[in-house]
Length: 490
Image 1 (spheres, rainbow, N blue to C red):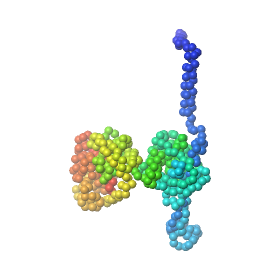
Image 2: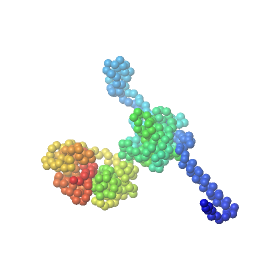
Image 3: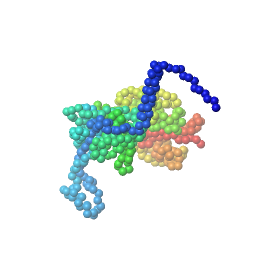
Image 4: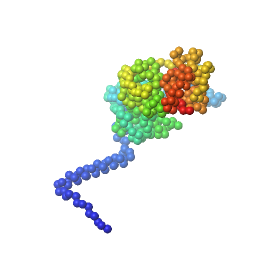
């Protein structure tokens, strides 16, 4: 066996060696600290954080007078020995309406400014006659409602105090990652000023609203936590605890807090106007599916498909049915939810650049936004189911008939509406699976109007000749339009 020696390194004098050793020791210490930080699975304690933010968290008690009526008495079996007891107990004055009674509810909130503005949930204070706020110090103050937003379930209250009140700042919920630690505070089940901790379980959750952007957390949230803050580890509010998912009404580790990215904008508007003033684009939109993208010639499913452009800002700017909105005010549009939030968070009256995809090309439009709350006051007429009509044809699993004046009157459609009415539909077909139903009106095919069944046949042949597998249909139901892509393959 042959032994090989390692070549000598250049020799260093002691004076030259000391700085090198110091640098090496510093690097070792830094790496050791980083390793410890990565290895730490949880904060050492939440005590300092809880002590820091507790003075700004409040318990909220509301009282409401409920007018008596015959239906307020408990349900007991007829002839039961308790029937007479409950009748006398609930209605001692005899027959007639029950007497008014007072109802009390509990919730949570947090102070966001030294002059007494408080954030909570709308459902905590809704219809309340009296609102009482209790601070961690034991101080109790009466609160007045500044404004509410049922769409995001946010309410802004105001209390008057001779002293500056402790308050907490909002943080950036967009910086929160799945797995980050969070701490919830509130008044669960009436047990005031309770703390629970957990992690961010998911981001971008939607429950039922158009502006939903919930942080999901496994920090224990129960009834009474509503309106309370969800903190990051810096003591900033990144969410307002709003709802839980539970089969039994108790915490099972799935709670939802409305993100501060939504709440901040709502609170600013409520503070300035006493109401929300959201931007309005004036279009009906739907998500773009893979089949729709293929039918349009779009490289991938993205953006928001415009299914209708009623009178409003978008029509004034030249937007058309069938456009796909790719970007709004310099930000890419991923889907309809994202676009609705972007538009709603933009100031009323502001002019923004909107990029749309139309007939294989992108176009830039300048849209001056209106106000959504004003536009929502307009009603949409309901439609009736059509009766039999002449010239019925069966295509794509549907029995289709052209619109006539009689059908327009029955369906409460304007004289200018043209299209094909779905008279019947086979429930085993793709059309039924994609959501088409009897009574729907097909107004466009391949982004061109159809008045006769022959028009639809021509669009199908054109799609096949162009090598497309799907044809895009614009379908209206009770005044609501949407696009559906159906296969045209033989």
